[in-house]
Image 1 (cartoon, rainbow, N blue to C red):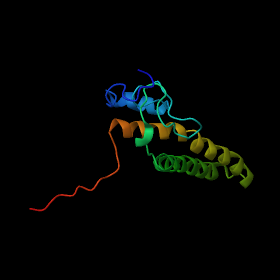
Image 2: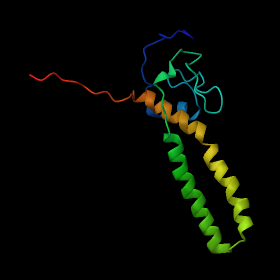
Image 3: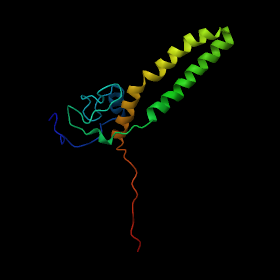
Image 4: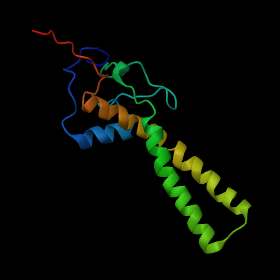
Length: 136
C-alpha cells in the first residue's frame, strides 16, 4: 500500500534497463512512481508512494566526478578544435564555452545522481563491514 514502509519485499527491479530508466527519471528505484528529490539535489527521506526509506542512498561525489570528466573532454576538445580552425579572439571563447560548461555540468547532475542511487538499490550496495572471525 502507498505510504506503508513494509509494502512488498525490498527487492530490486527485475531488469537493469528498468533500474537505469527509473534513475534517469529521478523516480523511486523500487516502485518507479515516487520522486527521489525535494529540490534540485535534496533527497527525500522516503518514497511518498511505496515508503522505501532512502537512508541507504549515498551517491557521494560520484555523479559530479563522472560529469566533470565527460564535460572536460567535450568542452576542452571543442575549444581546441575551434582555436585551431578559426583562431577567434578570447571574448569569443568566453562567450562560447562558459555557457557550454554550465550546461554540460549542471543539467545532467540530477539525473546522474538519480542513476547512482537507483544502481545502489539495484545492486544492494552498502557500506563495507569488517567481519570478525574467531580464531580456533
